Length: 174
Image 1 (cartoon, rainbow, N blue to C red):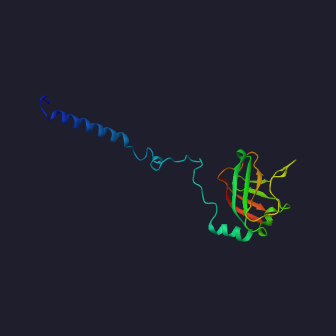
Image 2 (image 1 turned 90 degrees about the vertical axis):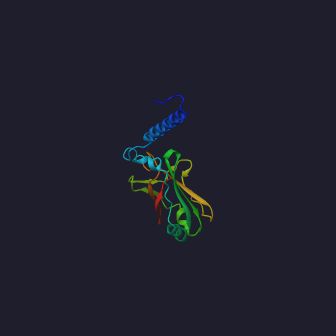
Image 3 (image 1 turned 120 degrees about the horizontal axis):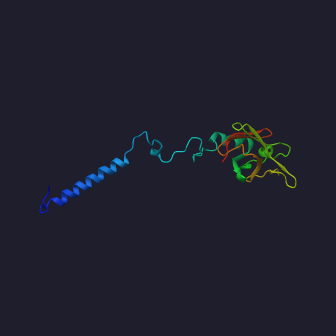
């Protein structure tokens, strides 16, 4: 077909090989849209699997409410001790308003409507209740631990914390 003496033969051969390589790689890379719809935006979580999306803790209005009415901010609920304990923590802004949260007579409870459970602060024989109940001081953080035996409350659940008249709703377990 081509003569070895023809000067264009190597260039034509190279062009032919290059075009066949380009065509074969473009066909291998193109897949139908129905084959992998989740791969377009990166990794997609399987149904029922937790995602890395973290909703904001509170709206600005809720933060102002807890600060003005109850004298606290930085409310958080964390999954601790491999899920056996749920830790609720908060920071005192106004000790007089926040006294209700540290009242020894008030029985705190953590309610998870999704799981249908109400957790309580356990009382240990030598330690007592797993909560701080000292006189509140402005700027200090306080905590209490709720027993999550059997781990019904999971990360990502929205829970409510009730301590006497104080009620924080929709806290996300981290």
